[in-house]
Amino acid sequence: MAFKGGKGKKRSRSAKSAEARAKTKAVVAEAPQPVAEEAADVEDAAQVLENREEEMVGSIGVVRAQTAKKMTNRQKMLVLGARNMSSKDRHLLLDLRGLMPHSREHAKMGRSNTLGDDLIELCSLHQCNSVLFMEPHRNDVSYMWIGQAPSGPSIKLQVNNVHTADEIRMAGNCLKYSRPLLHFDRDFELQPHLRVAKSLLHMAFNTPRYHPKSKPFVDRIVSFLWLDNHIWVRNYQIVPTSPPSLMEIGPRFTLEPVAIFNGCCKGSVLWKSSTAKPPTEQRRDRKMRRLEKQEANEVIKEKSDKHRALHPAPSADPLDLVFRD
Image 1 (cartoon, rainbow, N blue to C red):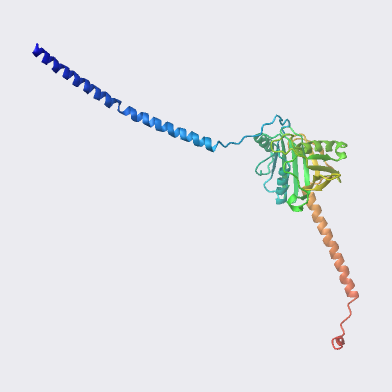
Image 2 (cartoon, rainbow, N blue to C red):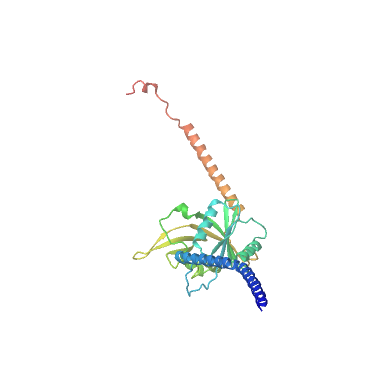
């Protein structure tokens, strides 16, 4: 019985050693878990610190003003010029863009036989329903096209007597992109072609209500007056005095209607001016006026030479030098 008991003690020791080995293996297997847990705790602490820093700094963002007023007049005007236009025409276009917040600009385009189709395509690309195009001729004659895209009508106007706002430097001033008052002469309602011109000018210079770029102020007035077969365009500031007065801002120019077309800068002619002259005839008239003035000066010079020959000046007396005081 003693021998069996000793043998039993040996077995219990081997079992204990096996259990100890199993425990060590389990400890070795479980050893990486605390490291992973510590790394996760460190990441959580860093995230908490970042969130606290963001809360302290604050989030920066642009918040647009919310309003229930919506723009119903979706008028957009494409304003551009030709490549060979003069510097004065270029500055005039810049002034016109400053008066029209609903305008869209485009690079200069060259002259071609398909001007109307090209302008219609540009209007569709810029999502515009009207166009204002400045077309020069040899840097001495300029035409302004105002048309409604893509179906028309359109009007061709000759630009004369251009004075930009920087050139005249008037004392008037107004807020940029403010909504203007448009004043048309009474003659615009009496003649049919002037009614078409009035509608197109109203479409070009009228600022749509609640436009995002426009200012909710009415501090200027644009007047269109009909005199001597020309449209005189002036831009005035409304001075808040008693009674209210006007002060010119600029630019100032005149427009001579040439023709009205049923398409956008193309199509058949609906009306043509009887007093307007083509550019070649205008150049010829200027040359003839210069020649007539030169001939008149030559006649005056011949008369003065004949008068001097018939009535010579008295000769100087040599004794005047002796008895001079």
